[in-house]
Image 1: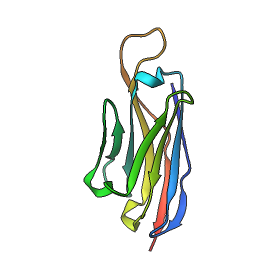
Image 2: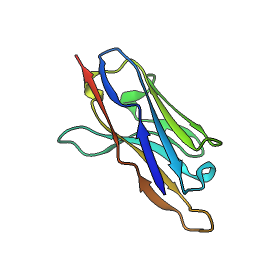
Image 3: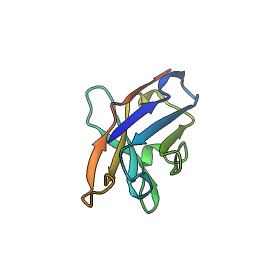
Image 4: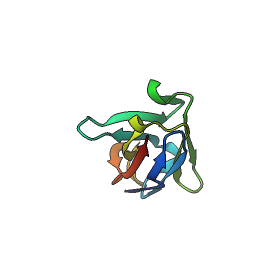
Amino acid sequence: VRLVESGGGLVQAGGSLRLSCAASGILFSSADMSWYRQAPGKQRELVAIWSTTTDYAEFVKGRFTISRDNREKRLYLQMNSLEPEDTGIYYCNAVGSRPGRSNRLTYWGQGTQVTVSS
């Protein structure tokens, strides 16, 4: 299973970024997909998840939107009204099965850096 994030970068406060996660080797349409982030010196935290429903961390509600394209096997995170506190490495996470396998495992991408300047 491979998860590859892209779309990170440097943006000023109030700006927007759109992250993308390309998945391969996993039954994407049945996988629970989510975005996590890790700020310097802090633990990794959940940002948004798409399983049977979508849910968001309180600190991004109304600013971030998670979406997915099952045909393209891509997960997205639209981030608007970015704040310096949103700075961190953003990770794509998948919980699902590989083709031909019934067990569901957790997979991580390598992360993409988001830096929001004040």
